[in-house]
Amino acid sequence: MDYLIARFVHILLIAAWFGMTISGKQRAQWFARENLAKAAPPEIYLRKASVAGSLIGLGVIASGFWLIHLLGGFDAVPWSISLGFAASLAIVLIGGLMIGRNWKKLATRRAAGAPQAELEAIAKQVGLWERAVQLLWLVALVSMVFRFEL
Ligand code: HEM
Image (cartoon, rainbow, N blue to C red):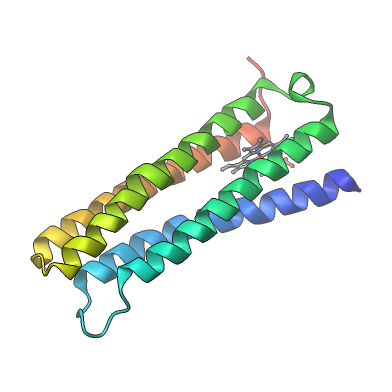
């Protein structure tokens, strides 16, 4: 039963993690294009998204470790689970360093009245890094579901 609960929590959290990559890209484009007077400041979204993203990411890793523990430790699970774990760490790094940093840049440049084209270029960077995260997420998904060995 513990295993099923851990797997349920794990899958719920990975779904939420992927969902954030879709809305993140759209929001960056929206903040770059939207009328300043109408839109909520990007810093508010950034704060909420970084807290939610970090908590969900930690939850994915914690539920993964819970599953590994229930299965008998790292030695008892296939090699590809470690690959998925590595992909998850890369997602956390990209989220914090590349996506978070570009969002901060978008917020400060927008507040400074930067031209539309510059804001859209920053939003595009956010979108590209979100795509990289989606690819890594897919690598983790394939390696967790197919559980291949070398
Ligand atoms: C983007 C990140 C991740 C995705 C998309 C993902 C996806 C999945 C999915 C779909 C399953 C269920 C597989 C099945 O029942 O057939 C699973 C199981 C599992 N995941 Fe993850 N996972 C991720 C991150 C992690 C991390 C970070 C760890 C370890 C710290 C981890 C460890 C495990 C383990 C041990 C299982 C159980 C495998 C088994 O029953 O043989 N996962 N994962």
